[in-house]
Amino acid sequence: MDAPARAETNTAAQEAAPAARGGEWRTLRSYLRPARRLLVGLFFLELIAEGATLIQPLVARSVIEHLEEGRSLLWPVLMLSGIAVVGMVLSWLGTFLIGRAGTGLVRDVRQRLVRRILGAKVAGVERRPVGDFLSRVGSDTTLLQATMADAVVEAAAAPIAILGAIVLMGVIDPVMLALVVGLLAITTVGERYALRRVGEATEQEQARVGSMTAALQRVLIAFRTVKASGTERHEQQQVGSQADGAYRAGVRSARAEAWVEVIAGASMDVTFLVVLAVGATRVASGELGIGGLIAFLLYVMYLREPVETLFDAATDFSEGLAAVRRVEELNLLPQEGSQAVGPGTRSLPRREDGQLQIRCEGVWFGYRDRPVLQDVSFTAGRGLTVLVGPSGAGKTTLLSLVERFADVDRGRILLDGVDVRELSRSELRRRLAYVQQEAPLLGETVREAALYGVPHPEEADLDEALRSVALDTWVNSLPDGLDTPVGERGVEISGGQRQRLAVARALLRDADVLLLDEATAQLDAISERTLLDSLAHQSHERTVLAITHRLSVAAEADQLVLLDEGRVRAVGRHDDLLTADSMYRELVTAFGAQGNGRPPLLSPTER
Ligand SMILES: Nc1ncnc2c1ncn2[C@@H]1O[C@H](COP(=O)(O)OP(=O)(O)OP(=O)(O)O)[C@@H](O)[C@H]1O
Image (cartoon, rainbow, N blue to C red):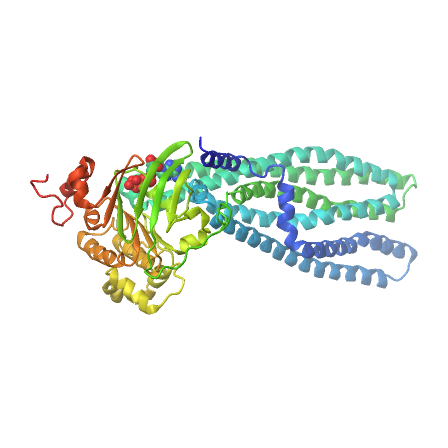
């Protein structure tokens, strides 16, 4: 296997592995780093709130002692009220700030993920189902919010609150304290087991949600095909079975969470009853005052909250770490990087005549270990060069290599003598305009779609580009003209109009090279003719490299490159190939037989 192919396989293996397993805590810390000041502030706020609650039992003991001694209750009652008010204010502030920190954390993680996805290599992104990205960026990050900020602050403050209570309980009665600590320790063992189950089930649930989103996405993209094929029920079962899988994992998670809750609650209830029973005997034997017993019981009740907080935080962490693992897998997507490979970045001088020569020299390329292009060599200069050949011959792959969506395994692709790998990707892509096979539209209106990625949009250029793809009349007929919405996937316009709009966008980019991957495939014969005339005109000023199965385009070309099973079979003009190459003749005959509404490319005698 070639080195680049091996590198790609290795990266894929890395990705497939549970990416950040074991390193989740480090990752989590990196997520929290930007909010660390706020989190530290919240931690102290939490401590003050806990402190205020901690002294309540002592004040309560003092109320009882005041009552026993017949003294005024004014000060103790005022103190209790003051503590309650401070507690409420701090509680509001803490809840709000924790919520804000959580939302901020999710925003940061989402923005980082989107940056990583957009910077990733094309192969890495196209290998995954789209829905999988959506669920990781959407629902997994939401899970992080519920978990992290709350859990981090509260889990950090709770042990201190527990410690404070334990110290004060020790002051009141060390024997009963030993009892309480022993009981709490026993319950921790069961809780740890249940928590591990929560983490596993949550990860499975999120993975199933990802698969469900991906399945639904596929259905929505091919909605008409699904309807026309009558496969609604089948698809419903497919998506439904993923939803069912998520449900079953969710139930497992809920069961484990319920156990955590029960263990937390039971440990406190049992502790309270044991303290009450043992405390009563100690009061009876005079080892403890009644005020002391009441204060101790209040501390046991007080302990319930931080102990439950700790248990909840542990559950949240288990869920959150499962989300971290899934989010981190996307963060490991191999990145393109903007820099050129090799000794240094070169740049292409702007040419006055605005066209660049593309030269392929002995290009080899394979997906994993399967060769797709083999020793491909040809030169495309000013004018229209058309790549033709049977399906799967490697035409789209060749354009991908010019755009550097992937790099050649062997050989070189040169732009005006400069290896494309020695150019930064941004410089390279600035000089190219590319229309991909499906011609998807980005932008909400006709104007936005046409100007997408156009560096210096000018209204006059826009009008001209629309005219040259014969869309001007259509745009004028729209209710809001250029500002008419075109729908999420451009479904409110026809396939042909969408392709023409994509070509207009490519023309507007004013690039030196136009790369068109079946850009006329969805046009009717008359529209195709118009677009071809326009392209022929454009190609006097540019280098156009176009793929087509329509040989009406090929006949217009300055040069044809016939690819077959990844190899260049013939290069020349339509007439030359017609006489010299039997495969080309067969393709032309087959095309003529389909009837494209134009004069036949072969005369009856040639056939
Ligand atoms: N991302 C990929 N991973 C693995 N194999 C791929 C990938 N993309 C394309 N191939 C394979 O590479 C070969 C060439 O594909 P390519 O799309 O370049 O052909 P093409 O000539 O453009 O075909 P068509 O005319 O049908 O669009 C095909 O056998 C295809 O299955």
